[in-house]
Length: 310
Image (cartoon, rainbow, N blue to C red; front, side):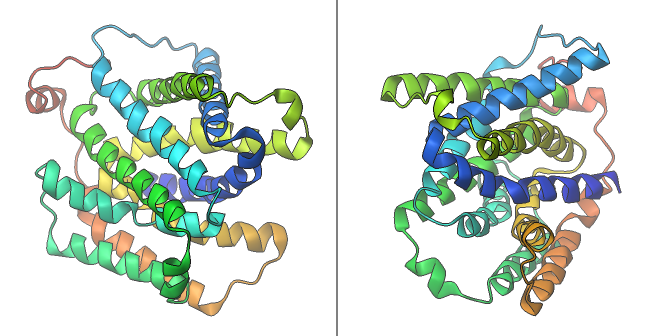
């Protein structure tokens, strides 16, 4: 039940993220967005650590694996998403992002020796059909969108898919807080370097408005800091496939926020799409969610004796 609560909460948070990115991308630029959301997210986690007065040991951590996760789960995909939203709509970006569970499953089978049962594959397919129903089967709209914008968005989903499987395989014994914090710090430093090299550093004076400030807080504090705690929690306690299923729900929650905040109409086909998506989540994750956590000895054995922070 905790995993499903985390899934719904994360989908509600990320349902607003594509809107925030659209608001900020013109003023901050793609890499400015990555820097802001990673920096604010990291500061949020550091504040939580300070409040809880819980130290984090950095000894004997798998730094190469953690830095790779920061590169592929924050720096590159968030930059690619921001670039894509300079060319396609935020709603279309969220729909393309919903292909992440498919890529996660395919990458798991091809590169990580993951075996998915027939019921799990059916869940992935049913969930994707739900996405098509959600957009009223408007495949023509997908085809007519900007190819570069679509391509960069798909590249971001591939990063997510690979990194989710990699995290499950290699970082099972590392604390969720540590994975999230290092991911965001890596993204912040990397994006700052890219801005310096490309000469795209933004001035805070140019973005000194309440709407921009609130979008930065929403994207950084909630959409990055708190969201990644939930995301890595779902990977460790559930599976990579389960965690990435959140992207199936994001278009739905984006519609919910439009209805709740802007009084936008939710069409009947969207309700049917939601039912199919939830059915897909259930089919794909019912057995996975019930799996017992690995013991410490099993983790060490599976990862060939590498010592991780507890």
